[in-house]
Amino acid sequence: MTKTQPFSDPLILYGVPHSLYTGVVRCYLRTQGIEYIERPTSHPDFAQHILPAIGRSIIPVLELPDGTIIQDSVDIIDHFERVGVPWPAYPEGPLQRVLAIIVQYYGSQAMLRHAMHYRWSYLDRQEAFLKDAFAAGSGPDLAEKIMSRMQSYLPQLGVTEASIPLIEHSFESLLDVLEQHLRLHPYLFGGRPSVADYGLIGPMFAHLGRDPVPADLMKRRSPRVFRWVERMTAPGLDAPEFVNYDTHYFSDDHIPETLTPLFAHIAAEIFPELTDKLVFMDVYVDQHRLADGKPVSDKPHQRYIGKVDTLFHDVPVSAGVQPYLLYILRRADAVLQTLDESERSRVIAGLQRHGLDQALPGERGYSVGRRGHIEVWER
Image (cartoon, helix red, strand yellow):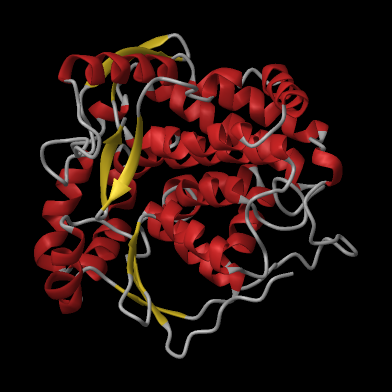
């Protein structure tokens, strides 16, 4: 177990309680025992100091005592993984690590559809709760404006009258799948959270485990899943009900049978949409002849570069394309690149067994990185 680098002063986390990606960072910092002070975006330092530094209004943002600013939940986690933490979040086994990153992608990207549907399609049943949350985070003057903007995102997330029944069935199925695994194990890959857990906790806490309508469903249908949400948001490893369960990941790169239904669920959810988005980016990059280091969009606050007509469980939907998805999944490609031919073949065979081998972008002649807090194309 590696000790976290001590800081003379607490870190400052800029975010709000109802923010999906802030929830990821908050869980990670609490698990690792890293002291921090959380400030809302209405704090004057955010407008006066943070916005000029990062060039766009986005959270979470972490400010270290030496003034270093880190924006994005993935980058914040990876920063501390390099520094050293008590409970490293990347499994050592390459198959576990690649699968964990795919789950992280699913939670942080594909589940935006579920999170935003349950938050805004049921506004009439949870309006008081949401108004209070947004007013507390952004101030009463901005709350209505921000709420209205968030609701406008539903069409580009593929939330339509035709897809809503499938989104709700998907969430209920996910609860059932996770419930069976979490009855036997405290976290997805064993005795401590991985990036898979951190990827899922974003939507599963901030929206689905906190907003009244989906949180009530979670508590009634899948109590062990709700307990996992509590565990992820508590300090340290909060698993007293798992007596004598160690704090390691499953040994020898083992994947328990209880995770097989989860991977099947994810495969059914992300395809063909992920494939269609990757093809869209292939064409986009080729047509625009984008140079290395060019921002992925013309304006820093814009993260979508277009939309694709695709399918969600055989129902046609239009979905916005965020190059950021490549930023996440390239980390799985990087794992394969470190392996010899035999190990690479073993991991690919494992992905094929779970129908997830096509989730890795592979060689495309370009990638997405980050420079100066902005996503950029890399050639």
